Image (tube, rainbow, N blue to C red):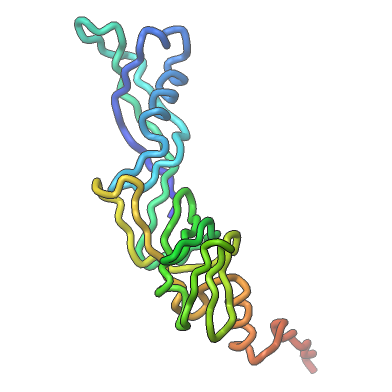
Length: 198
């Protein structure tokens, strides 16, 4: 789930940035520190949006820089358990596929694709279903449910697991087939008939 978080920090403005505006210098320092970072509480920090910097800074003896308190907004992405996400397959491996969801990739293990015997063909970049004949390939878009999230210190890149083994999940064309079956084989939704009052 994407959200905008408000954070507070203290930034050190080095003498080399004294010629630029205080806000611009602080935003550049915050971008270097926070963007592309994973935080256990906030998730993936994508970008710094805005910052309010205290004009009155502090100096420390022996340090030529100034220290300013800053309140800033950051665009974050925190994957939540049971959340439904849209994604695109970016890689096929022997054990499943990696699906791009937001700013990161989630693992779709072979056992979580569907109830069928599956074969992973890494060379052609496809996962093939034995009985149904359905396929997944690099570039396929799909809908999945998040089943595992690990953003702690041990997971430097974060780990996310997803599943497609539920109704109306999986590749977009599979979902269309399920909707067609559920509506009795009709392609279009039923048209409303006009009833005139007498």
